[in-house]
Length: 468
Image 1 (cartoon, one colour):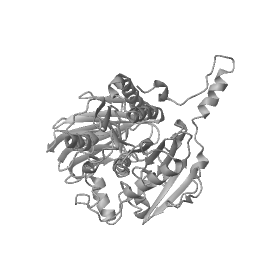
Image 2 (cartoon, one colour):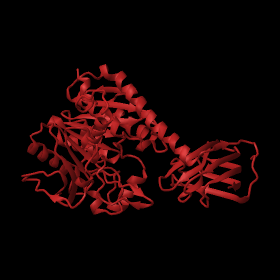
Image 3 (cartoon, rainbow, N blue to C red):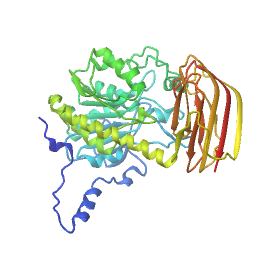
Image 4 (cartoon, rainbow, N blue to C red):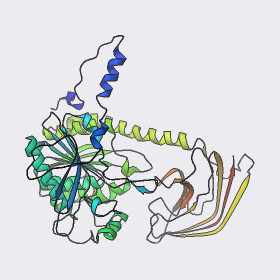
């Protein structure tokens, strides 16, 4: 059985004294990452002739692929390889490359640590999600597996002690790369394994690269489940948020149907597949990933899997970790509501108790989403530190049982607060907007956010009133 001491990094004992807080401050600094390591230009490393691997920015150039990396050498004979996910945006602008998600967590272990940016982003500037794919003639995941092989050999690390780690599209790349590596552990947190469906990321990929992910691929990059089913020397850890309908219905269930297994909440496994199902409420359930503290639990589970322990002995422990995960995001949502919306009241048929200063009437609105999952009505002329009252009357829906209204953040693409009403139901909705009002608006969706495709909505009247 894996030693519970392995769940956290070793630290020297600290005893009660007048100096205890100063000693604790020094220990906390142990987890602070050196930001200078990710600054400056990268050092080009010859993948076929590695003579040194300096800490900090390095890169590999293989075929048409440019692999920008962050590396830190550890004292333990284990290697983490973190594969980046989507190129996220801030204030409507793409983040600069590279991003190196989780790079600062190298302080959490004594392992060697390699973060790799998706080389697809250096070829297609407008591509947000690339899955380490490649092109018609080159498989970038195979190149990534080759990088892992060469570095593991240079560091004298056994294949079984190499961990491929990623979330979302990085999880996809981690699974397939580990299968090609034919060893180690693949960790995928809310990663995609099913490409046989319609999704904006798939259409955007086609628009940017000319590659249709629905078509057959000679490297089987669009049929990952068939690849991993043939790689018995690799162990797969699938971590999934049960609250995320997209991840659960389109990907987790798809994989489980292929291996004929029904995982349970918490830990379960079959053969070389391990599942950790958790529960995190969030405005973006797909991106409710682990934080640095929960990473210690993930790392401990990887050690359990590597040691071939029976996971049944640890089920209650990981149910406890699930409570931590749930509370982490539950508190985030509560904090967000407290900071942005100090008062939110659904008034039903009750009239507002305050005298309204201004009133805007909008009549005869029609929303046709067709193929657009995010089509909506939006009122964005909002003011800070203002109480708003919204009355919606005369609603009819086609192919939808309900509609959603709420305060929407266009930067984060999430509702800061929302209410779901039944078809035909009139709504009186009240909220207080504090702080910056830019990039926020009152949105109405014919259905749930992200699930309005082919639905139609008409609204006879919207009255928007406010008071300072």
